[in-house]
Amino acid sequence: MNSPAVNSDPGRGKAPLREISIFVLLAFGLAWLVFTPLILNGTPPTDPAFGTATHVYVFTPAVAALLVTLFVWRPGNVARALALTPLRPLRRVAGYSLLGFAVFVLLPGLVLLAAVALGVAPLDPEDFSGLREVLADRAPDAVLPETGFPTGVYLAVLGGLLLSFPVTFLLYFGEELGWRGYLLPRLLPLGVWPALLISGVIHGLWHSPQLYIHTTLGGMTLLDHLSFLLGVVLYGIILGWLRLASRSVWPAVFGHAATIAFLPVFGATLMHADGPTHPGLYPGGNGGLIGLAVVGLVALGITLLLRNRVAGGGVPTGDEDAVVSGGEPRGAASGG
Image (cartoon, rainbow, N blue to C red; front, side):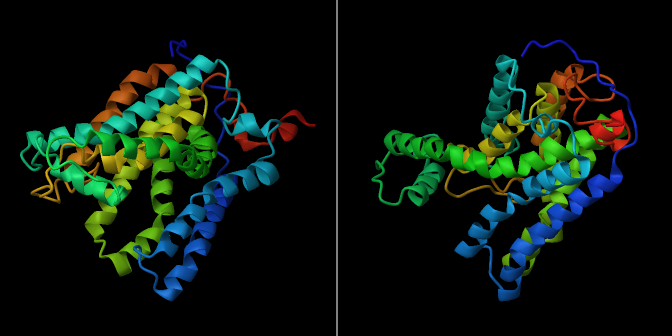
């Protein structure tokens, strides 16, 4: 993790907007294609079919990235261009992967502490009633002790989450290969912050078929939409810095998968079963205005921590495959 600050201007040309537009159209088109049957059938988000469709839909950014990379961009080394390789130095990739995992596992606890400090989230450090509800839902056949911390069931549920983590990792690899593996570095000729923010907004809007179903059949409001989209952008800043500083997509995958896998349990560990008193400020997890504020502060901290690893225009040494002046394929750039 103690890699030196990197020089980052391999020739700032124009961002390959035509290529990026094709990627965005493919990712969005495939996403809507997956959910259109559910929309036509009036399938609510509580239906198991919604979860099945989601497991297919998360791979649409990866499919779009691979199609555009192979047939439009055509770099000399596809795996390197999408930040799948190199994995060396292993210490750097593993270190940033661990950082991403830790940040997103601990984030719900930080949000909860902020909510408690502001008086909108009651704790139950004696009977752990909120945790008991979550564990009963996750392990309905388990026998919970009548009082105290349910250590055995808690560890069993966490063990199950760890065992299933490779599946979660695979699912959200599908997203990160598209957003942080392909899109973010292709936008870097615009500058680091425009690339981080634009990729985050596109990532958020890609959820539009899910948001449509949640709005029409799940009661999601306009304020919920805005909060969700801002959250995706803030998450994207953290994941983006991890991707750029590590020169690898894998830390972003670890971070994204960690928040999906562990948020429900870790976010409820100390909560009272009565839940938050002001859902708009803190509905639980990483949500609400308090959640956005804490995630924003963590994004700022990650920015201050990692920005010197990504100097200048934002392309770390070793990422030259990801940004070629003018967006030309390597063969075209060299005349070959």
